[in-house]
Structure formats: structure tokens, C-alpha cells
Image 1 (cartoon, rainbow, N blue to C red):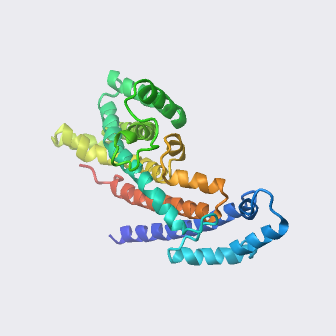
Image 2: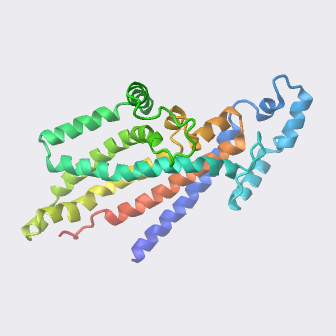
Length: 316
């Protein structure tokens, strides 16, 4: 127990360091962006005096280290800043886009885990046979298709030709009130993660079923189903947990391509609009949220992997 607590403490300390690095990197990268928000905000034909006045009003004339200190202090108090273009708090933009993105991510993950793990276990149980070859070939082929190309294909076939689902979310208001709007985006989001998760679980199951502790359990007369699902599967899921954390992180970070294709007003759409408007505080706030999500999810994945990883001498 003391060893586990020490390991958790080290990982939490590493998470704090990573979070600080994310904040500094976000500020440095946004400072390095080309263009000037004051010029964009001043109008089509701005004069130097108006640009100077706008820069002063936005606080852009202050030294970078002062703006960094104020921004970090605000983050520590939960204040992500204020939009340069609208004057709204950045937290309001996050709240507007978080709901649709979270809904898409939640539905995708709820389907991803049983489908991906199920396909991986099924392929491993039939290793080298037709079922295994079919699943392996299908997952490899689908994984090779980019999200944008798959999304366009699904829209062309199931929305425009067959008319089964709406092509975009425009005009449908709340996504929960119109579940049909979610079908095509979720299929696009599921395609590649399901393939990678299934292949990882398959490889982990094959390795776990061939491990000495599995053979030891079978010699003790433990039923095959219990060996597969109580002994082999937890160890096969250890590497898949890291992939699942990366997938959830990718989903929560806006899924920009999918949201743009299906016109879904999530965090990805908010980020694209902020970049187009040179709204630096919104870009910084979103980047920090995405970075924190990555740190937290990877910490959780490391903890789960640590608990699932086989220990020496812990055979059946």
C-alpha cells in the first residue's frame, strides 16, 4: 500500500509539472501566432492611432511577462479571461461548446468499449481462423480511412442518397431531442478508435492466454471462461487502457473535423471561430482545457494500468 501511495504521489507531482508546462507552452505559442488581434479588430482600413488605442484597450501593449502573470493568476481562480471580440468571459464559450462535445464523446465511448473489447476478444478466441482474419482485415481497412473521407462517404450514402439521417445538425436545435443527428457523427468517431482498441485487445488476449499463469490456472481445473475473462482479459486490457485514455482525450478536445463536417456547435467549432477571429483569450482557454484533460486522463489511465498489470508471482 505504501508503494502504491508513493507511486500515486509521484504521478500527481508529474501531473502538476505537466500542467504548468502546458500553461507556459500555450501562452508562448499563442504569443508566436502571426498577425495582430488589434489590427483585425480595428476594421478594414485602420489607422495607426486607432490600432494603438485598440491595443491599449485590449492590454496588448503591456509586456508579455505581465500578461502571463495576470493570466496564470486568473487561471488559479478559475478565470479564463475575457473574449477580445465579444467581451464575454471565456468560460461562457467553454460552457456553450462543452455540452455537444461531451454528448458526442459520451455516446462514442459507451459504444466503443463493448464493441472494441468484444471484437478483440472474439478475434483472439479464433486466432488464425476465418473470424480472426476477417476482423483483422476489416479493422485494418477501416482504420486506414481518414475521418473526413469517411464522414463525406457516410453523408453521401446515408443522408443524401438514402435519406435515412440528417446530413448536418443545422436547424435541429438540441442534439438530445433529435438522436438521428448523432448517428453519422458517432459512426465517424467510432470507426478508427474501435479498430485500434480491437487490435490491441486481440494482441493482449493472445499474449495473456499464452502466459504461464494462464496455463497454471487451467492445470488447477479453473473453467476456460473464467480463465479468459477473470485472468487473461484484465491483463489484456492494461495496454488498451492507454489507448482508451487517448481516445477519450481526442473526443473531448473537440473532434474538430467531425464537428466542422456535421456543423455541430461543440468545442472544436468554438476553437475554429476563435482562431479565425484572432480571439487569443478564447484560444488560450480552450488549449488549457484540452491540455488539462490530457494530463488528467493519462493519470487515470496510468493508475488503471498499474492496477491491471500482472505482478510477478501472482499466477492463478
